[in-house]
Length: 290
Image (tube, rainbow, N blue to C red; front, top):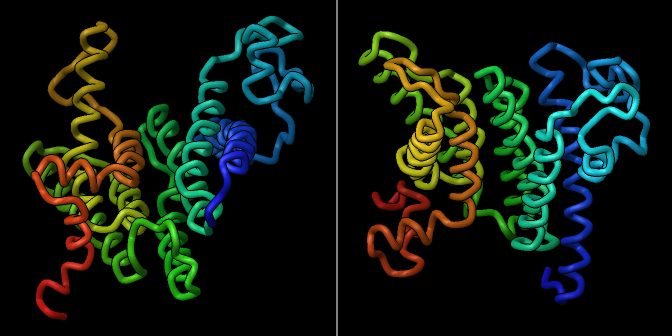
């Protein structure tokens, strides 16, 4: 749906506010899920220092942290700035998604996908695990959503042109990264990559298709991981040893988000291909006349 400029601006403001609120809930998931806690019990957030329930006016996304100076009103214990950063990140990504796609059904798919990527990334950073409720849930959910939108004629905005490409993308991405995991395990004599990464790329492959997933696994994610490790090493905050464990999930998530928007342009520029050439990659079975 084509929107007028003021409608886009108003929608972006709403998307930012909604994203900040969703980010507040994502913080709850990030903290509680690895501990086996329910997101609904306790219903209200508490200060973990004094266990005082946080009042609603002190629990407004982004704003309350700034107003309170990042401290509990009751005991003065500091609250991590990461809570507000997650809220801000979610708000910015929701705004970007709305501004890019507008009011189409695919927007809802990408909003949900982005929220799940944020939760998975931060849990992986904290605990080096990717929860099954994110990866397995997404592996089932997103192919179903793509199939439903495609068959109902509401697929506008989806990067994959149809449900066969989505299913092939999920299968290819998971199989390819599993082969890398298998080969790495043989080479190093220890597990080179968790199965969570395999399930994550099955989920992402359904929305990216096979060749964008390949680009993420072999290009974007490793480069992002290497750059991050080098920067942290230069800042003397990361000690690199032979088998230093680095969670790869956040880089797969970030690479997948970037690929959703810019993989076509990046690959065409890198390989000196004419604009639009990457559309020929989508359905490889057609190369054989199938």
